[in-house]
Amino acid sequence: MTRFLGGGALVCAISGIWILLYHAGMDVRRPDVTVPWGAALVLAAGWVWAGSRPVPVPPLRTVDPAPAPPTRLPMRRFRGVLPWLLTLLVVWPALSVVTEVSGRADGDDMRRIAAIQKAGAAVAKGRVVDVQSLVRNGNLWYDGDVTVELPVRTGGASHGTVEVLNAHFGQKQKDLGYSYELGNLDKALAATAPVPVLYAPTAPELGGVIDINGNVGRYAAADSPYAFSSAPGLTQFLLWVPGSLVLLVLLCTIPFLRALRAGRTLRSDARDGAALPAVRAKITSARRDDHTALGRRDGTVAVKSRHRLRFELEDGSELLIGAGTLGNGPKPQQLARLAARLGDRPGWLCGARNWRLIRHLQPVVFVTDEGEALWLTMEREDFERVIAPAGPVELDPERRVALCPTPSAVVAGAHWPWLGGMLLSYALTVLVLIGPMTSAASFWLTMLATTVLLASTVLLFRRRSRLGGRTGRWAVHETRAPEIGPA
Image (tube, rainbow, N blue to C red):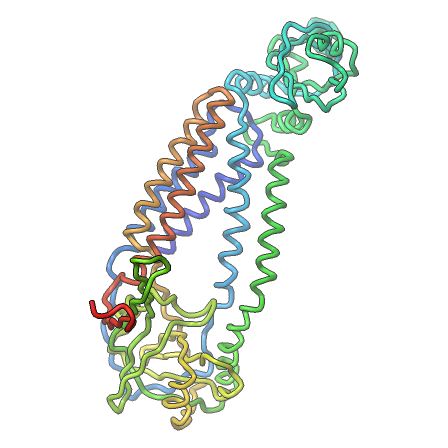
């Protein structure tokens, strides 16, 4: 249920983002975008609710005699790719959504564009024959009302005039030059080369639109509510720049993927069918070691936590083992939930036959008698003391096991405030996408929605890092640095 709700929320969010970027229909109201995003929020709320419930513990099933470890050890091959896929499909386009929504046209322009699209939009070059008003809008633009002569198909006439309200002329375009002062723009416009205009040839009374060439082309291409067109130039730019940055980060993190090779060594040893060093064990609890030391600033302390699973071996001794390797196994904060699910279930704790070829942390896999596998990592000293000298155990080529389900990453104290921020950001964005307003209003509302979204995301990561390691039942072992004295 948790995966279904989380996956559905991602699909709805991604659909809304890409529809907005590639659907240039200028309807005043955009249910094609707001409905998927609303559904994503509802599913996300269900995901948080389902993920914050107690971990379901299946009934203990005794298997006698204890089965041998399998030769096929399951491994998540693409788990490390998921963050990159989410970045590709969500984070990059979300940056472009900000520019797309914040730069939305005025409400009157949107109504005019929508009416032109319904009547059959076309783009033609026409000559300005009259200028009613023209004002400077910043350093790059001039806005005004002009009359343009264009080819029409009404009343048997081949040419007619179209009124263009709130036309946007770029200072760098040929229709304006750097040499003209504001007082001489009327004459300059009348003497320029034809300018591209979006209009309806069969309904010139609807007026026309003069804008950036890329926008005019998009509006003409999306002549129906279901038509798609290429994203605007700024959106494409923002899609490429973060893409290059993420690719650079990926290249820098490739050396860290070597952590997966250790797990593959163990998996390869098992697949060869030869015996593996293994001991019988069971999980008894999850342990958290909290070490209190001096903080970075005077008058403060810092608490560093280490999360491990406590195993009990057949001889009654105990062993502490950490979380899995990169891309495999659970995160340290999830060990308490795993201990609740797998506690007191006996199984085999297996290591690699060629463990001497693995530096530092040793990968191990805990295979319960009931058929679930859990990837973990051990300190090399503990491995050499406990598992390496253990007698080799023959493997069963016919046995099949499944990976232990990964506990939910939801932390109620972090995800519910984040979801509230997402809801507020969505409400502000809906105001822009549903209610026609001025360009300035849409810009500032979008900036406010973006600020709320970023703030809630930062709060999510900070609270999750602080509360995640304290979710569930932990056996806490506290220590203090000698220099700070007793508590």
